[in-house]
Length: 316
View 1 (tube, rainbow, N blue to C red):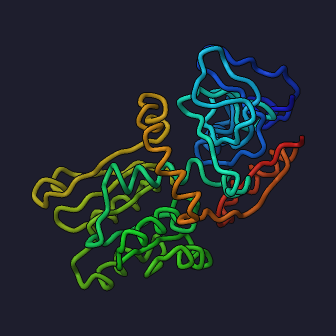
View 2 (tube, rainbow, N blue to C red; view 1 turned 90 degrees about the horizontal axis):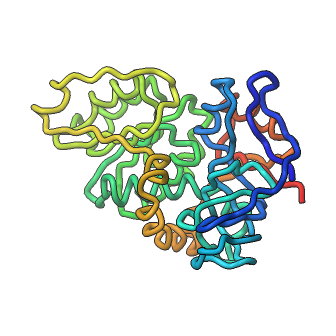
């Protein structure tokens, strides 16, 4: 089978290897598509050896002797333990979920990380209510547009999206944002939009100065959720930013959740898949590359010009 991995000398390589064999509670999936995520981009940017592809969709091909939750032939979403950018991958059955036949492979492949992550952020980490006002940073990306859709579905009226350039604003508006600003202007714009009140929740995957500026527009009793570091910069927060105003900062990593609490992911899966099956949440797709074009796909990803998800389609 073909698989993609990061090689320290050669960079991204597509190479032949033997099919992995599932054992115990493991499931082997014949992969149809896999998406590119920022966790993968970190591996590539670090130029260190590592596997790529943290989510996938495909058909169950073989199961370990203790597997009971899926069967051979099931269409599934999975978070694999081997590379998801491969023709076959292995996942623990707790992280493999059946999907309906009505859900297209493209929409399913674009959705695993972004919809699961957005569900946890808006339903479990800081459950949103219609009374909230929010900022969603990186609003034109897969997670950003999904967060906006879920917030809109909850009945929020003030949904401020931020983008690196207003060229990307349209994707945030299509998802349901009420206002779109740049990372440079959102601090002043938010004060104007909220008439000096600030917002109650901020979803921050950027870090650095964006986090620091966010605290200037986070209302008393508000919460900032820090769930990424796309800028690669550190943020500096003072205790004075928090205790007197009764504000809080929460950290969240869906990768950590999958690794240490897969039972919580499994429990949430039925609700997430209902959202997808109903068509309530749609993830925009920017481009689809073939598996053998993986290097080109990551070059495009690194330009940050995409709006929506980038997918790899397997060759078989």
